[in-house]
Image (cartoon, rainbow, N blue to C red; front, top):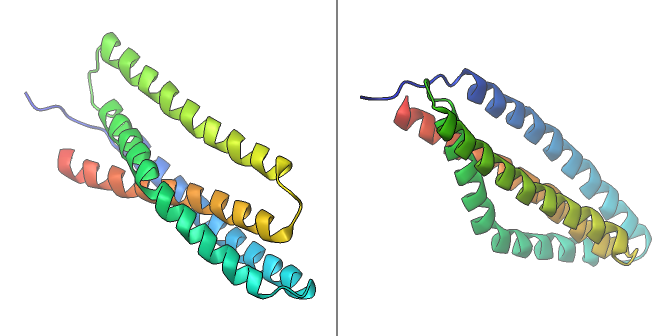
Length: 155
């Protein structure tokens, strides 16, 4: 028997993630202009381009794990949209959700700690900031893509 799914909550979540992504892109552009201005005033305008390149390299290294995590989270959420789940199935999904949220919280704490413990050089702070924002954006993009693909497959 094929399971039926109710994707109303998941569609709402992907819309919220889309709004957050727009906000983060605006914040990223604003802070990029801010860091560029500060580094230019310090007489190191080339360091801004270096920070962008280093950030892109970091994002290339982080993309696969982020895509994997987002795919698992999207699969879990799509599975939780099935009608008539048993108590055991709900417990397994809840455990998976707690593990996923713990990983995301650990990454967030890592970036916040790294920002406070890093040297107060604007170049280093710009790399950390850009990496943090782009990591969140990449996760949301991968999540929305995976969730929409799974909803099409199962719906």
